[in-house]
Image (cartoon, rainbow, N blue to C red):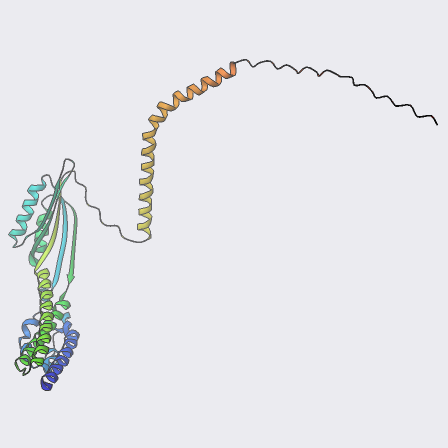
Length: 312
C-alpha cells in the first residue's frame, strides 16, 4: 500500500509539473500538436513534464492556413419577397457544404423580415457572405475574426498531459493489492478521466467554431426598418439618451395637450360666455338708494338741585 501511495503521489506531482510546463509552452506548439504527441500517453508518469517541454516551433511562424481562426459575420439585405430570398440564402449555405442553424421570421401588414443563422465551412465564409449580399439591396455588413490558435494549442498540450495522467492511474490501479488502495485509486482515476473529458469537450467546441463559421443573414421586406445597433457608453451616449428621452416626453406632452384642446374649446367657450353674460347683467342692474339714518332724539335729563346748608 505504501508503495502504491508513493507512486500515485509521484505521478500526480509529475503530471502537475507537466501541466505547468505545457501551459507555458502551449503557444510554442504547432497546429498539429495533438497528433504530434501520441507518445505522451505512453510516457511514464514521472517523465510527462519532460515530454511536454520539448522544443516547438513558435506560433508566430505559423502560416495563415495553420492558424485556428473563428469567423463570424452578419449581413442585412432588403428584398421584395422575404420568403423567396430566405429560401435562396439557405440554398447558398447548403450548397457550400453548410446548414441552417436557426430560422426566425415575422410577417404582418406593415413589415416582414427573416433572421437566419447559417453555418458554413470556414474556407467558404467570404463567398457565402458575398452571395447573400447580392440577394437584394445590401444595407449592412459586419465581419469579425477571432484568432484562437494559442488557446487550441494549449488545449492540445493539456489533453496530452491529462491522457498520460489517466494511463498512469490505470497502471497503478492494476497493481492495487488491497481494498483501500483500490478505492483510493478508483476515485483518483475517475477524477482524472472527468478532467480529460472536460478538456476534450472544450477542444471539440473550439474545433466546431473554427471549422464552421456562423453567418447571420437578416432579410428585410420593403417596409421593414433596419435594426438599430446598441448605443455605446460614455458621455455622448448619455447626452444622446437624455435628449431622446426629453424629446419623447415633450412629444407625449404635446399629444396630451392636443387631445385636451377640443374639449377645452367645446366646454370652455360656452362657460366663458355664460360668465360674461352674468357679469353684464349684474353691471346693468340698478343698485338700491342709500338713505342716511335718522338722528337720534335728544332727551333732557333733570339737573339735580343742591340741598340748603343747615343753620349754625
